[in-house]
Length: 81
Image (cartoon, rainbow, N blue to C red; front, side, top):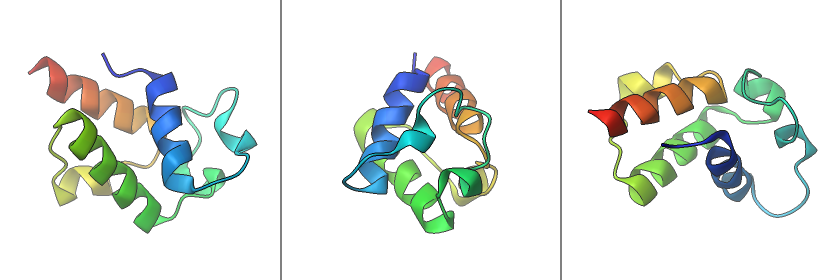
């Protein structure tokens, strides 16, 4: 199972060096724009998850990833299949 903590760590890696207080607390339902992620950063996140976990991310799936919860649900559904 892919957890919020695992996603947080990948998001921090994609965001680059430094502190990322926006990923602490209840970040799971915040839109990526509020977390400082643009569409390129979301694509990088999807690519990293695909590389690390082997979960495919077609463009249509990436387009629907507007919150971290969307990513968690998608990854966990794919891993269960």
